[in-house]
Length: 157
Image 1 (cartoon, rainbow, N blue to C red):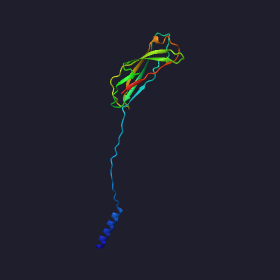
Image 2 (tube, one colour):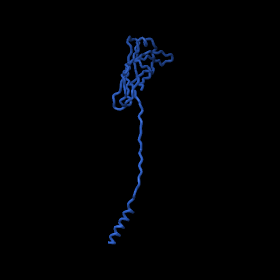
Image 3 (cartoon, rainbow, N blue to C red):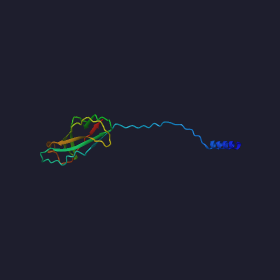
Image 4 (cartoon, one colour):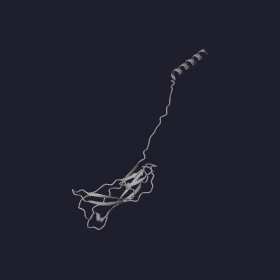
């Protein structure tokens, strides 16, 4: 029996020596991010009136669509054309020549209904149609030239 006790004791010592005891400690890793309130505005193209015919009696017209999306929950406060919120903007294009003439035009739009962003992904954009008009009287007495200008279109949030 002495031999059995010695064998068991030897096995216990061998087992204890081969077992590694590990200690551990834990910590919490906080993960954070932020998403800014943004809106993305795109225009369907330039407002191109094309070649104006001074022999015509018709006004010239052109249309552009403005589309915008905003981050979810972002309220839009206004839609503007060159800072104007009233739905009509009057501007002037200037000729490229050395003694340029200018052509007056107007852009009209219907102010969009209230909009709060639904996100920038696969959601339907809010659209605003911008209708441009050049009265015939504004281009029948100008020099032949290429006329241009620029207008800021903005969605404010």
